[in-house]
Length: 200
Image (cartoon, helix red, strand yellow):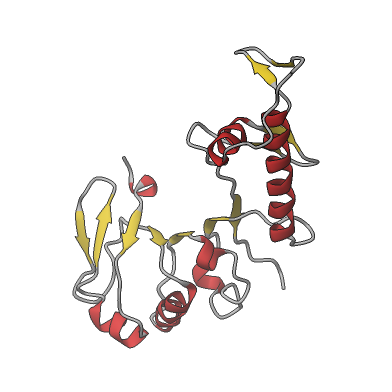
């Protein structure tokens, strides 16, 4: 496994950048091969590790970027978390030379930026489908769900019965399929972001 495929996780707990800078020589990397790597005596990371994965919040990240800019530390491939990779304030001109080419994953945003409304919409539909299937007396087999004629439908369903039906739903909205895995979790969806600097 070469350096480009090695993920590095920075373990830093200090809240103020001057504390982080003073501790740079002691900060400890853990790689995917469980190799321990430390900054050298000048506070520089070893040259062969050029991929950095920052998982702290954007406030701490700002302090780190400020110090990296002062020391002209460039040439790293950053892999970012949702906390800072999708934050436009982080991508300002002051840090562009450090963060150019950063990659990261972010929770998807639709065009109208109405994630909450979209999630509520899908949740209401999912519960409606679960209730429909629960009260609709569908006989399920491995191939398809076909309606049967039902008699003696219960007046009430137990919550666990609705939850079981909820785990089985599968429907399509205008832009995505909605379903759950065997644990009842929806599939993870992320936007992949890549920061590129334009002429402006």
